[in-house]
Image 1 (cartoon, rainbow, N blue to C red):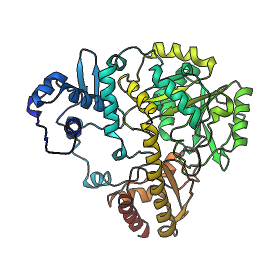
Image 2 (image 1 turned 90 degrees about the vertical axis):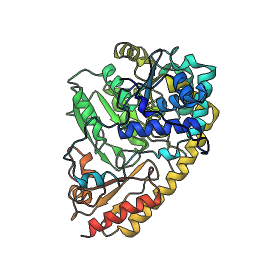
Image 3 (image 1 turned 120 degrees about the horizontal axis):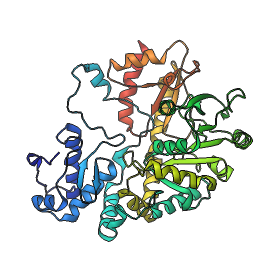
Image 4 (image 1 turned 60 degrees about the horizontal axis):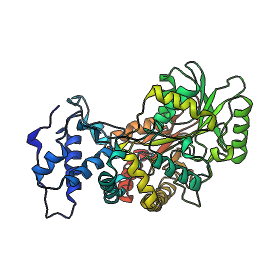
Length: 465
């Protein structure tokens, strides 16, 4: 699909917004509104620079920023085209005509769990580093990486998990992936065959169940108690378990040290594997993050999965696996047949962003802001909603659970809430075999206090009627 010349625009040099960001704003807007369809080609950097009377490096910075955010993809010699990656929602050619006004309104107000606030993203600092990489080391954005990813980024990840998660690992044990789901896919293709059993938490992250069943694997549901996820029952022994020990999703608890050791002993005894999904472990608001389970295990029977989507950007689509030495070659074989899916372009820039300290400055800033937002939400629920239920205040993560009284049903209230223009996620939707869970999973990171108050006011009205 060729670039539509009618969409050309002019930059406003009187604005304080940098020119590269003005270009980004226009492309984002057109992508979301349908002015640019998925697959549409953008003009060459030199051509657009001439049309806008700006430097080519300015256009390159804008394009690479949009690549990092997931709006564009670039191929050497083939230019840039619009794409839909992860949570970047691009419109279809035809919107369904039967979407009701209530459904449209409901999508506008929500407290979606596990969403970072991209308004806090350090766009200018990130763009400066992308531009510097484009000038000084452009080949690193297209070539030179092994199937495991950019070496500099893998070294930066090794340093990060040593300091923050207590994991000692070499860059050779680290595989850069296209997000946490891609990491799970690689692990499953390496460690299990269709028909084998995989243990998943109940309640848990529902997309994992869909992913497991789509691969032809047999799910074994693991109950959660006050010490964390319970061990598999003897009559149903999975070959792999997927755990969130540092901050269980969605309940939010931490797996006790005793339970962790029991799992590691179970894995060793049964020749099984533990996949540790550590998706938001850096967001602990009281003290330092709890050491990872993989650190307890010294990467013996534990495969560690991390992601930058919660810390840095939900559109960057970069995650990583830290594998035991015994799995490095099997995973390499999987990667050779599976194909490299993690985009190379942002990897060198991200490694320099981490080494420069900008990454940690951003992390400290959002932790402080998210902590304030969590405190506000907990206070509102405790003071205004105590007649309807209780909240478990785990000082970590990106969501919390409000447990409803038994006289109230979360699915019913969630349906009624849509009619007043809000969307809340029912806790019972995250459980597969346990009917005891009844409440809401509420996010707070991506919303200001005023935005949360708007949703809570409407939710209070629904619960009061």
